[in-house]
Structure formats: structure tokens, C-alpha cells
Image 1 (tube, one colour):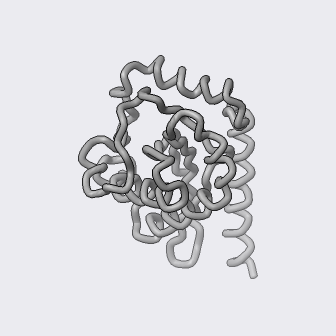
Image 2 (cartoon, helix red, strand yellow):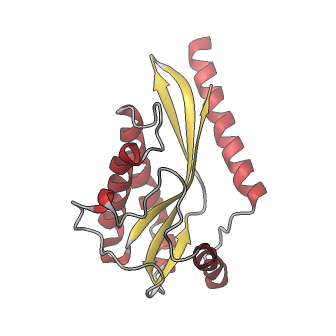
Length: 184
């Protein structure tokens, strides 16, 4: 019985911690256009989009090749960034036990004015993204140095393809804006 309670407890604690962290950090979760402009301002304040955290690529590099589903558009060219309301929590299970949790926050790059479309389809987007993340986790994608570009490429490609299946041409890219792994 304890073998079932402990993994469930870890997942619930991780979920509560992720939600609490998201609320504490004050992430913009409203579909208000003014709030979305804030996300664009953050990207513009960063520069021309060339500054990325280690292991991240903007989808316009080597990891983006081979996916003709997503239209590649230069950052800032009639685009806006829509941050999904809640983080994604992916349990990493090894030998029937939850060994760690990966917490991710995603932002979608869409044509200007399509932010409402993202929020209308958010449940389906979240389901598709979680399927990709669970498959990535089960394939060992979050083991070891999981933030290296080569390790992240399959996840990025899968997320882009999942978004394109739900939103079609109304999505340019899926950006991983936060990612962390908490080992148990």
C-alpha cells in the first residue's frame, strides 16, 4: 500500500509546489492583450532573440529542420507571445517509482491577434503537449544532461508538431521558457 501512496504524494506535492511557484512568481495568466504585450516586451528587451538559456534553441536552428508544419517567421514580425496559464508537471518514473518531477512553462508564438484562439484551444493544447512530454520522459529524455541542445531537440520538435495539429497555421513556434527537474 505504501508503494502506491508515496508516488502519489510526491506528484501531488510537486503539483502544489508548481502551482504555488507560478502564483508566487506572478506569471501573466490572463488573456488580456495588455498582459500579452508584456510578454513581447520581455522578448524585445532581451534583444533580437539571440540570447537563450543553455540548451534552448529558438526552433529556427538545427532542431527546427525537418518540421515543415510550422511557418518560420522572424521574431517580432507580426507575432505575439502567449504564455499558457499553468506549468506542466511531468513525473519521471523508474522501476515503478516516481524518481523526479520535471516542471515546464511554455509560451506559444502566434500571429498578432490569435491569442484568443490559443486560450480557446488550451485544454486540447495541454493534452497534446502532455502526451509529447510523457513520451519524452518515458524515452529517457529528461535523464542526465537533459537541457543539452541535442537532448531537447526531439521534445521541441514534438511540441511544435502537437501545436500545429491543434492550431494549424496559427502557431509559429512553441517556446520552453522555464524548465526544471526536481529529483526525489
